[in-house]
Length: 311
Image (tube, rainbow, N blue to C red; front, top):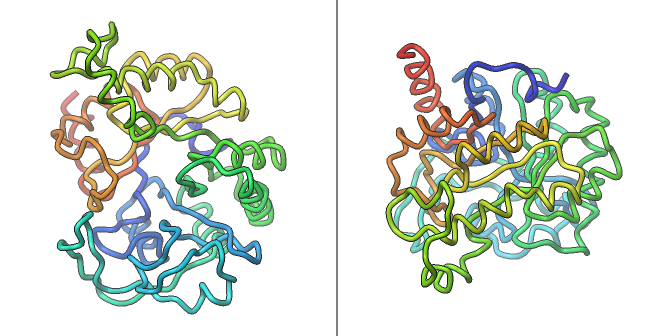
């Protein structure tokens, strides 16, 4: 049985891109730290290079992390393998907040991550996309090929914001567990318009302020239309889009639902970071989510254990 689907008494704790408080994101050093901390698993990001290698990396333009500009999808693996992730990395949109790490790190291939950590960590492989692109659908089958070759299907799931990639992955290997990821930025353009309407009747409306944009996306999430198109068995969602009813509906479909990203270090694209993160963890645990992704897995593990001991 896939490890994500085994019975659990608390949400699984996944280090978001490894353990970025200690080591640069998406690096072997960060994944080793996740093992040392006792994490259930990690979330990592992947792209396909020009010569069809699957590399573990978050940004399409590697400049923020390596100082070299361009597009990682236009590079060959030989070119990517020569890049090094800097010791000093900006952590906000304006680039005036930095975090300094012990040493430079290289960019790994997905196949070596699976070879090293299958059986040690559960892994959510996010096929990185900023919007669905038919021309990049091959990433799905390439990822499926790597997972099959590594024999790692019982310890991985795959998520993406690109349903073409997910569809391609499912066609190539239907037994894999995969699903669409929902981010509240999907409806940013509707936020101004929906805020003028009376509040929708939803669990989201109980929060302070007009939550119509979140209620609308929560409704799309719960309908699972994209999930049915892709053939999903899991779903990922930004934590502020999940309520008790959301979890119940997916569990009734025998699907798993995970939340991201708690205790965020890189806040450039993270919503809800101003919320009380401890209370959000408690709420998500009470809702019954199956996993939580976090930049600070040590803190999250401690908090969940404390919640269990208090109950």
